[in-house]
Image (cartoon, rainbow, N blue to C red; front, side, top):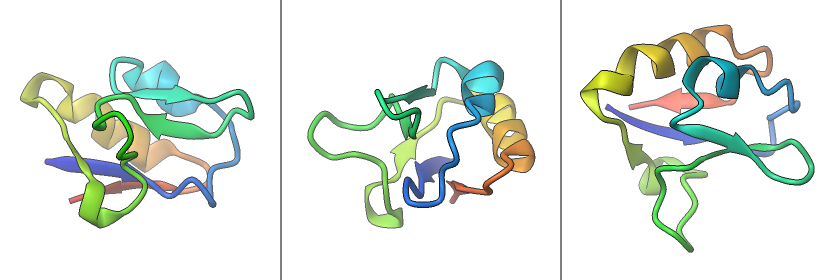
Length: 75
């Protein structure tokens, strides 16, 4: 499974960090991003989606389901 965050939709609730803190973080403006992404290539679109380890997958799925802004995308 791969994941990316549509940062334009993120409302900064930080729920993704609570549910899957090993995968997500927020910047200084509380906009979520994928920590697993390559440096300099943010996972902010389908083409740059980051791979999620099997042991993190269920937490990431839950974060995507519960995200109030629905900005977490799974492939």
